[in-house]
Image (tube, rainbow, N blue to C red; front, side):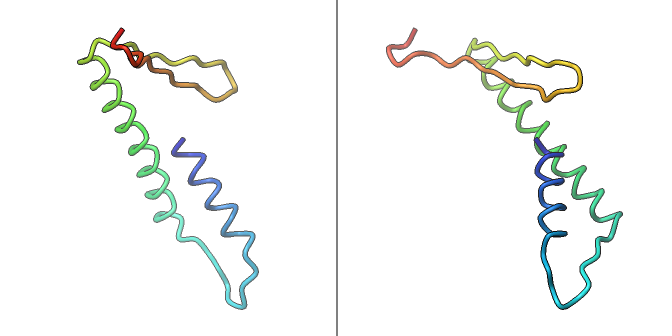
Length: 80
């Protein structure tokens, strides 16, 4: 998730045609990428921790060379 957001932003910024030169500062871009990936990981950890306390299940399904899909189970409306 974090890497996808960062790469979409990078491609989008390169698509602009501006009368000035647009260049990236690579250390800042890498720091931004790290922040996006870290935020995604922290968010997933918070979700897992909260659902574990409620007795709900979380899991991930992944295939090599493809994206991973994260799942979680919530209670039904009638409390089951």
